[in-house]
Image 1 (cartoon, rainbow, N blue to C red):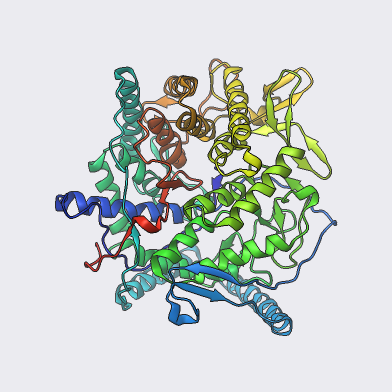
Image 2 (tube, one colour):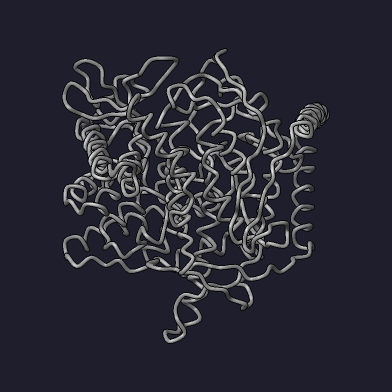
Length: 614
């Protein structure tokens, strides 16, 4: 949902997937491609799983502390010999208070020493010339590559792997809908082909300048973020040649010559030091060499961000499931347990939490940027567990009830919107990012408390209508970054800095979910309107670009083709014009960057002892 702050993850060796019963054998080439697909889904999810927005906000002195005790939690499917009494269950015991204080003090001392060491290293580096620094960096890179190549790869025992259901096809019966779907596919090919020509290997594309575009949120200029982000969309659309091109780049340039799962674990192990804080709430960023972490300076006196540390659960749990290693699961469950113990103003989760003190930062709550995907992941943790993670569902229901009570309002003109709570008052402004919530409410309707499924489905529809109005009230029929509900102004951006559109997916995402649950044709109609507007105003000869003012009939382009445009916007449009058997929601859960992860059905798993795919 939000702009990704890079936290690349990964895992160990994985056995090949059983894609069908023995009576329906698959051609080996197709099998290998499908195996790579699921591994790359996991890779894509890991590389884009932490999100935030860029605002500087002041601190608040009204805080609450919590103790660091960890309740007993269970993880299915981990080796029982590691300490669990019951087969297939790993028991995690909380430390006693005395040991906990000692551990906290040890971590504080280590953090202080690490930061002092890093500061001294930085001072020494600054004394050297640029050429010397570059040479050292290249030497370190070569050393890491060599270590990865020579390090022994221990095979893992086979683990239950879900069958892949509905990963291709989805051809609609209606000829008009089929043509629209083909148009979306052509748009994807235009975006990909131009990236392939002008930005290959760079994180993103500047389609007008026709060169690569790099941003600091990915940590490196040539991480190939667009390639990783786009792979599953290419596969779903049947663009298998393009998929293989991307796969080859990853193998050769990100040193993915080994199985993707092994690479994932190597990266994940490098990320684990980010959790070495007195509270266990991770830093936003970590130096992969030194293990020293830090937070954004603008984030309420160095706080961690709810939508970052709260958007790790799906990927970390899935990694523990695939590897049998509970360490990743334990990290995110620790975060959940701590959040459950904390006092929440009006039942709302503030967007900022200090990882050193365990205190809330500024009392700012948002279902848009800084908070959004935390709530999404509570619901999706329940769904991914085949609706067995009741704790996650309760946290979601509690949070949604508080949001509906304090943040959701109806304008004078009858539009339902989600405002933002800031230091005791409601700001009547809704961001484009918050428009995903319409789909979330629809997705979570089934299983809601007090038989309120119809209520939440209707609430999702009302949010979809409001977000459609934010598009319809512009000159370009594309929505602004945020819009106000203040007096006579409704669903319209007021400040110039909020009038841009950067190819965001959230509104189309909500249309897709509402279409899946209602089959109301208005959602396909609204989605097609958005697709035509993107085609008309954002398409350029070198790809697709965002625009700086959606209220101007002669817009200026920002010259950036965002990686999430290929990962999310075009994927959701393609699914909107596909039949429901493509990635059915009872078998797949989409992470916040629209990368599908399989629901872990106990009755839909298979063990395979075949050699792992390379």
